[in-house]
Image (tube, rainbow, N blue to C red; front, side):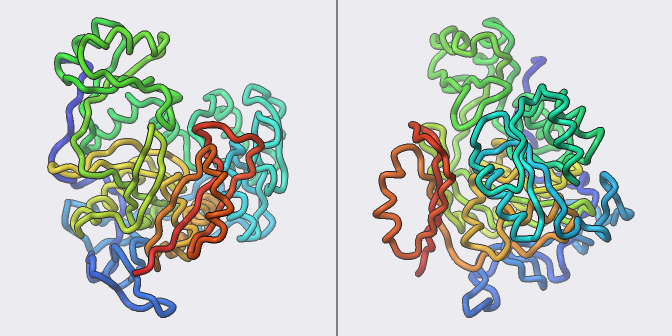
Length: 437
């Protein structure tokens, strides 16, 4: 039936990876690797390079899965190359001033780089730590132009940036990750179509335009299923579950005329995510997959290592690399996956640093925020090896009342976002718990 797409083929297909390197020795997943600072390296490893799950994917000796071994010619993006990284004192422009922009700014500062936040709202969390803040609407062309001219490269902390603003900004400075990643991720239908065109599995889905297409989709996909807005949904917003066909009309009304997509429910054992980075020269580095628990549509915890076999861990990393290469991506991306008896299904991709990657701040030498800054600044990607087991827990709303207890708990690192007002369902911070033994 036109408008419908089913889950893709059963195995990770070859081709499409312009350049994937796995160090000589191939892939392995030992219980523990060589000692690092007196502790064993845990998780997914890349042969001789021993980067834990921070495996660097570069010139290839890997022929399995049909991965191409072609090394690209030296590439430049926006006037920069890997032989000309941003110097000390250069400025990274960040669109969005929330907690992700805040932690990106801190990471940039550690590397001697400045950050300039562009944020429509007053007193954003990132403004407490950034070198400069522009408070203006995304429709303010003069402010956008002045912002772009004051920075060396532009990145972003969220996906829903107006196209017109991006059109103006990219005429002045390079935007990393690029426009294609935003185009794909801003629309759930576009994203699902992109993934299935790559040959990757997703939940069955259908484009919904009216009651007739919804009824037809339910007939094929079945119930329970979930109706989602195609754009602007996050943390469980813009989603309605349909438990039986009789609930379809009510669910569609809740979309309030917004373009929508119906997705079938997936029978999965757990959800995991891969935080992956790609540099402008095509190198890819992935952190160890983390296992996610959601409540009311909001991420509550991410635990590493995830309960994955060596094969599942390898497949997850290669799958993420495939997506980054297909988008010619530069920066960090979060790839959410469902673990099913039929293999890994892609839930969604986020073209930015991701909530499920916050554990890297206390489990790795190089965390996801520094890795993203390195990529967009044309610095070499860092070693993302995990040297300890970690559980990240979001502090949501009144969870802040637990601060006295948390601050006295051993092996807990507290990260607060400096938000002015506590609200139900609002992420106020997170903690990383070191798991010993």
